[in-house]
Image (cartoon, rainbow, N blue to C red; front, side):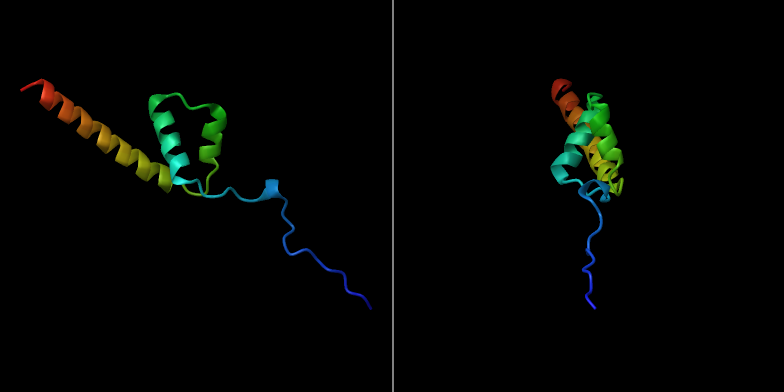
Length: 79
């Protein structure tokens, strides 16, 4: 009796679950979304990631930094 080997990984590369995005990709996605210049393909890639938390946290940090930058600029311009 011969035993046939069964493949351990039966998934094809295209059927794998989406991987976690890198920090640079998250920052680029948040900045492009904030400026309104993100392509629909890139937006679909962002929404297909496993967790929205990296994008939420990066968006909150970006918003806080943006508001603080505006406050500093206004304080410098208006004595």
